[in-house]
Image (cartoon, rainbow, N blue to C red; front, side):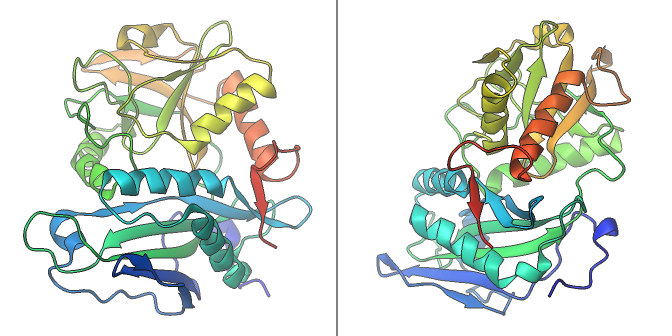
Length: 340
């Protein structure tokens, strides 16, 4: 039976659900994993995650489709991305098939927390892993814990997606040959000061440039960026230091194969930003967040799509991808995994 939650007024924050998944890696192997009701973690004061931030995570959602099914979107892509992250952080890799099974099992156990279709809300899923044994010298952990918890969340935008304002900061997000391409917790820790500083100055987010030359667009602290040219080509930055967003890759596929648009993944000089017709951020939480304005040290770039609503192409992309996710539009094979 569905939980008695005010779905319409649900915020985007943590709400404890009944069950979560836990598996431990010790002596070179993963245990079989278990579902538990205990949301607390007990670990040693010298655990590697607490001393050297050896941790990574993924973010995804489960939701009800138009015909009442409970589904999730491309979990195999999250499994692969976490595996890639773990390899780079010298963490044990949780098997990709078991990752998907753990996600499905955790959602099934918390099925009463999946919001009804049409509410705009969803069940957020957070798989994560950390080094759990005591480590004093700077080296990787030898024991790890993989967990999955869920939390019902409201729509990212209350009352519609109003375009946001980005600023070009004096901070860098990721170093060349660093960790920008993986979903490590430490990347987000590094972005916290920059995002608080942006908010204090009246901006919604930071548009980071490449740290090597500070001339090319990369991403924001928590999302990839897409642009639309005046002739309706969808363009996204290509860089070895940005996170490969699953939402962004899905949107580019939708643009090309569903909407018949030309797509490009290439380096984007910041000097070109003023020439685009539309701009948006993309990620799991909001799917697409329209950008109306970019401010570079006092110099304002206002996109023709304006500060009132999503641009025309951005709206089509948003409607098509959410239509696929919600079962209103047929999905490419393998994109939707039915849970219930």
